[in-house]
Image (cartoon, rainbow over all chains, first blue to last red; front, side):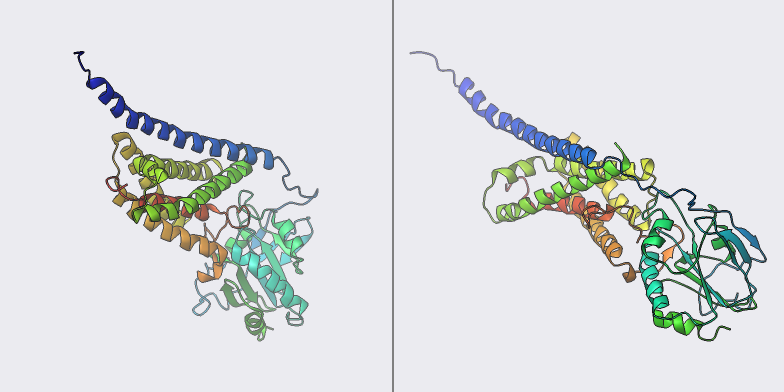
Length: 222
Length: 175
């Protein structure tokens, strides 16, 4: 009688699930690797160049000179202790270098906008339509200030964005250290500052405003 | 690789993960009801490894965008990071130690998924928040968007949901 060697078949049987486990592991790793490689190839091929170019002479930030006492930081429209204060004068320029001054002399609403802020992106078409519908009171100036400008952030550059939206008001490009925004006490975007012809602050507001609120806000300003 | 290429790369990975999740979920649910499945056995066997790949990949992507691309994380981003980074560390450790701490995966991924979903909705509908952007880093800020809906919180949401789906598969002894 020949001797049986029962260990060998048993060992072979036990090794099978182990081998299967190893092969399953390699299948998982292989599938992940293939997906990663395909995604990388598509990403590299599809994202070649094509960076946005801005016309010559256009600058997204410009120096701004502030004269007068800065307004305290805005907290709330209802309990704004700054109402009645004379706003500081801002001397700067638009994206293309055209001089712009924000100063007493006419009732004025200054709108501070950031290109990356979704609420500003939604407010700009509202303001554009409001102006087209004749919402701006007679004798009132509306001036935009493009501030918070950061090349790393979305929807850059602001000059292209506001041109694309056909923003109807003159826009001052704030300085890289946001001198205009700081002088007017900006704490959130979009930010509205309204002053009368003597330069006294009438009201401030932040956040999206609808046309009715805008018109109501400006009704009593002289 | 440019930042734009990395954005597209991570978005494609997120979509691939989402597709795999959508395909796997019904199979995992069927397996829980007693229908044996080869793929579910494999996923259950390597649950910690799969979670480590998803959470580790998400963590690497998040670190790239904050440290290399300089996208400053907002408050909700930080909350998601707490969940995802913890998941990555636990899953990698569990893979090395050949453990499967499924309850930890489920708790962290659930918390992360809820925050990601809210953050993504906030990006879609900014008015559900305060209606204004803070001058620092508002949570409504969309750093980039691919295919019209894939943003950073969306990718995090896919990661959390994928981990939860992997955890839906029956526990080892049942599979």
